[in-house]
Structure formats: C-alpha cells, structure tokens
Amino acid sequence: MQPDSLPVVFGYLDYRTYLRDWFDAKKGRNPRFSHRAFSRRTGQRSPSFLADVIKGRRNLTEDAIPKVCVALGLEKEEASFFDALVQLDQAGSTREKNNAWARLAASQHFREARRLEGEGFRYLSHWYIPAIRELAALPAFRAEPDWIAGVLCPAISVSEASAALECLKELGMLVQAEDGVWEPREVRVTTPHEVAKLAVQNYHEGMLGLALGAIDRFPADERHFRAITAHVPQSLIPTLKSELNSMCDRLLELVDGTPEAGDEVVQVHLHFFPLSATAGVTTAAKSRKEMSK
Image (tube, helix red, strand yellow):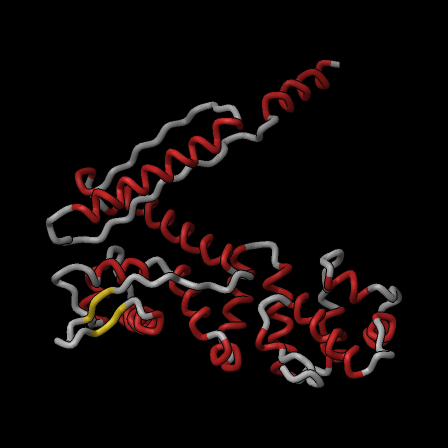
C-alpha cells in the first residue's frame, strides 16, 4: 500500500484491522479527519463508534454494515467482501463462519492475494484431502480422481477427488517425480491466523463424524474403540493432555519405524472432553437446598 493510498479490503481477514488501517491512512491524508467525522458519516451518535468497533468493544449490527461500507467508499464487490469479513468475525456458529469463509474464498481478488493460505484452510476443512495425502504414500497409489474416489471410505465424488488433488499439488504436498510417479512431500500447512481455529475445528468435526459412522461401516476386527468415563480434579487435566500427546508421538514412531510398506490409510483420534460443569456438584447441591426451603 502506498503512503497516500487507502488499504484494499481484499487483503484482509479481520475487518477490525482493516478499519484501523483505513482510518490511519485516511488520517494521514487528511489530519483533520476524526472518529467523530466517521460517526457522522454513518449516522452514529457516539463519537467513539469507530474506536469501539476497532478495539472490539462493540460489534457492527446488520443495519450499520451498509452505512459503514458507504462511509468507507466501498464498491459493490468490496462491500460484499467487507460484509463477509464481519460475519466471519461475529458469527455465532461454525456453520455461519464457514459460510462467511466460503464467500471470502469465492472472491477472485482474495484468491489472487492469499492463494496458498486459502488452500491450507481447504486442506484442513475436508477430511479426504489429508487422507489422500497419506494415500499417496502407498505403493498402489494412482493420482487419478476415479481411482481415489472409489478407494476412500466413505467414497467421495470424482469432482471432490479432482479438487483435492489440485489442492495437494498447489500446497506442494504432492509432487511428480522424474519417472512420472506422484509422491507425497512433507510440507507445513499454513492457514490465515484469523481462521486457523476454524480450520482445525473443521478438521476434528469431520474426522469425529467419520468415527461415528465407522461403528456401523466396519466390522470390529477392522476398527478399535476404547473409552473411559471418569471423575478427575482439574489439576490433572494438563497431565492427561500430555499423556495423550505422548501417545500420539509413540504411534507415529511405530508407523514411521515399520519396515513394511503401507497398504491402507487409517485415522487415529485421541480426545477427552467434559461431561459436567466444573462446579456441577456444588450447583446441584445448591439447587436442592433452595428447593427445600
């Protein structure tokens, strides 16, 4: 961005950061421009409206978004992108956030500016892309959408397999050797920090959904489920996490250390989560006491 130019909204994934940079640039061009002046442009009574939004003290309402877009001087496509940025930040559910991301990723300007980051998000958000990357390590692998679509469990469409192959190639995770064979490569997946949590959440939700279906999809000798339900002190939770992480490392050592070639792809998922509130017993006891009065 040139010193005298305003920032381009397509280069952002955080609308508050964009507003901050826009105001700083506007102030640089016109030292007399103020938060109060912006409030007047948007019909807001509070002179600190913009400062409060930038600092996260308040959100933009649906009514305020188009007025802010006008004050920013955004064209139709830019305004639509800005609206999606607001939804990505303020949406209350994973589905709404993913819908907002899809709108952002559909923008040609965004794809041109952040192509690899967008592919990184796509990699984590679709369970079959990491699976295909592991599938590529098998001797029998064929980089053909028809073959891949039929091998994965559950099966995916040919178009999904084709798009997944392109994603892996874009990320450098699937590279064609001199002999024409496609081989996997170890590449760090980069996702925009603004949506990294969403991408990881998509990954775990996708895999856990597959685990649920696997109970009926595979016979017992092809899968393994083991679980415990226990009461624990909060002080033990970091130790439990450390033990599970160590188990993951040990399983990877076993996989990497085996001399035999792989012939299938599996998913191993280790997790734990609360089944009660921390103060659940106290709250229940308090409720019983109040009811007996």
